[in-house]
Length: 127
Image 1 (cartoon, rainbow, N blue to C red):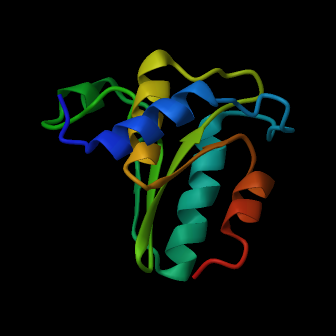
Image 2 (cartoon, rainbow, N blue to C red):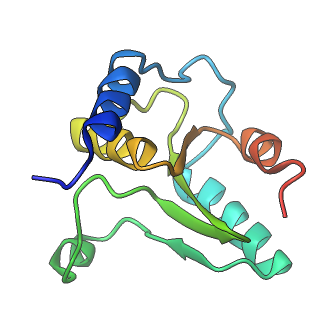
Image 3 (cartoon, rainbow, N blue to C red):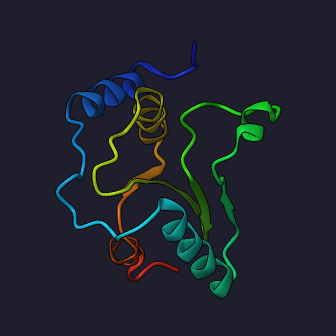
């Protein structure tokens, strides 16, 4: 159970109903891990704290781990952004979709990202 106000819950439900994905976006060729590495390097070069989960069976044993957590958590001045990285045809799993809706309903920015170009567009003009 959560501690959302009635208004927060209504926003969550509205976003859940309006959900769409970006499977039509031109994806980078290759593995998601390559895209992940590029984004982590981008953050390091600019001095932004970045938490990145690489695929690992050990990850599930970490205390506090939650299935569906986005691949990248990026801290900028005054906000935290979440990125779920996907290949050209990779769909969101149910737990990823559920957690994305919760993060959005709580006022965070969450993005499904299929290419480095798309990531750079999202980050354009941010500090």
